[in-house]
View 1 (tube, rainbow over the protein chains, first blue to last red):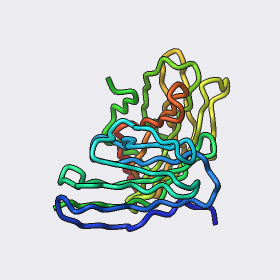
View 2: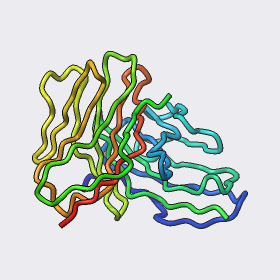
View 3: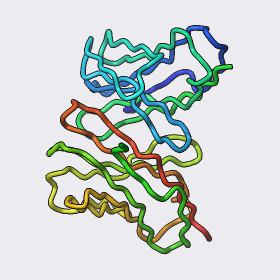
Length: 110
Length: 115
């Protein structure tokens, strides 16, 4: 089944403790991206990647890192999480236009 | 300035009636794409419909149609014959061609279908 898989689904952590949210797609898409969703703001793009080893900042990249060492995986790294990074995070991939989304990761930073 | 504006934070519609969700966008690109996504209470993002900037016909997908008015920079979603299962958050989004594949989303409209 074609899908984008994010893990974990829920994550509670404390300020400053490094964490990684994984994202994997099995559709051989070159483009992958990360978004955060906050009430009243919709989804905002954090980072995107056009291909392996090619990443670029979206609209809200501060406090996040990504890597794209292989086509299928695009992890989101929070080196030192802060409470303002509490949000719902989505990973997505696309072959051209339509975005295929993962099921989301609800992150709470205490 | 917001690139995607959805002026209706919440909407109500009676079951079986049609409803229009508004979306206006701002871009200087000639090539761009417009999308609508549905997010039910379960949280997943469901693709509904796509319109390319060069498409002359309005896009349709079953009960969904996109009313594309390029000169007005609007891309309203029309849902015909509303169903209770249509109650959800709806996001308008744009892919700007000038910045690779930068996707921008609006703040969303929460639609409630009344029985």
